[in-house]
Length: 326
Image (cartoon, rainbow, N blue to C red; front, side, top):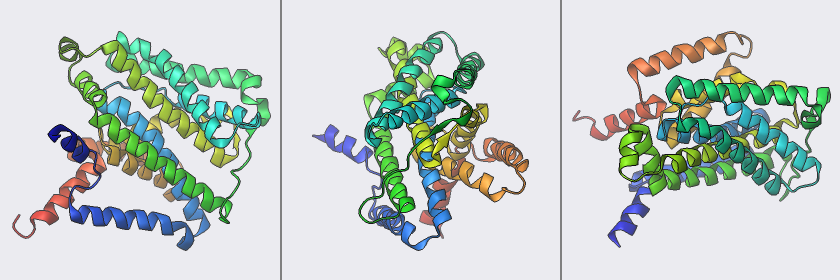
């Protein structure tokens, strides 16, 4: 019974009454937001929700398992085009989303095999090569990408009398909530502990009975599933996709979000998604400044706050908990 209670406690988002109140206020704000905000802000919040799903998946691979991957653009493309074709063939939204994620997960298992032999920069180069290869396949095979015209995807049909923008927002936020809960369960389970053991020392993990083959491939599969869903949701909200959208810069963007938001942190993944979504909007008239801001911020994080934005939030919260006796 004690183990069950301890596990249930670990899964709680908020373990103190004050934190539960704040969490309730946050959920209430998310529910009310599309009714009080301008439509372009609702669209921006929807983008943050879908990017958060992809960054969480990337963090499960990089932060918790220690497997560096720069091939996420390939999984995004697979998820987006698989979703597009399934929708064109008449599949319902939920089924197309599941199929896109599953196909990306299968590709993730295939890409994960090099991780059994490669580490560090060698693995990152191998995954980068996968992303470039997938990009070239979609560029040159018009039957997959729809040619120069790309793929057009029908919008979600609004329900319950909501406008299209509001309905899409609620669907994406609910999906983010589900994927966040799933990620918390994963990292709190034996699977998550196996991931962390492999990250800290794969040799020690194997000596203690952790199957490197099983859990490395599982990490790639789960991460790729999240990224494939991210690609599918991105395709849905854009309404039209082309291979040029899924270039290597998308992989770098997800990597930046993980580092800046906080490595091995689910909450940090969401904060990182907020950062990489807002920065291009803030510098919309100075696009050349976006990579500069990313690079400078990463340097500041690595030097002054290795735990990222979430680490800064934890320190700020601790300061006010101890104030004025600090």
